[in-house]
Length: 117
Image 1 (tube, rainbow, N blue to C red):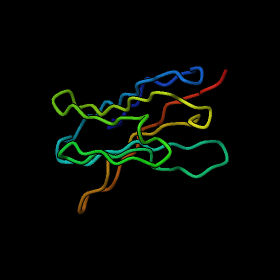
Image 2: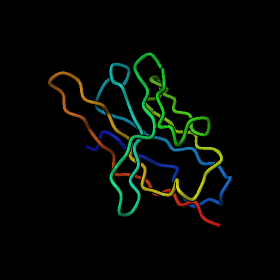
Image 3: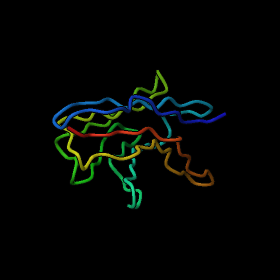
Image 4: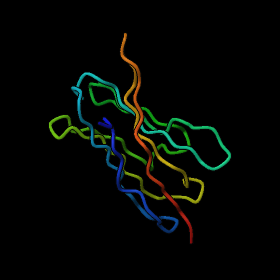
C-alpha cells in the first residue's frame, strides 16, 4: 500500500492557481513533518515547502508569497495551494513524509504541474 498519493496537478496558464493534495495512509500523520518537492526536466529534485507537526511552514525563496502548505491531520492530508503560477513552476510535484529516528522517509508517486500559455 502506497502511503502517499498526490492529486490535483494539471495544466494551467501563467497567473493561475492549483491546489495539490496528498492523501496519506498507514501511519499517524500528526507525528511527522511533511513536505512538497518538485523536479523539473533535467533538474534535480528541490524542496518547495515543508510543514512541521505544529503547522509551521518553510518555503523555498522562489515560491514565498505564492504557495501555501497546510495539513489536516484529521483528514490524513497535506495540501499545497499554488497561486500566481509561473512557467518555471512546471515540474512533477512530490509529497514527502520526512524521516524520523529509525523511520525512513517516504515519497509519493508525483503529480504533473504544467504552467504554459
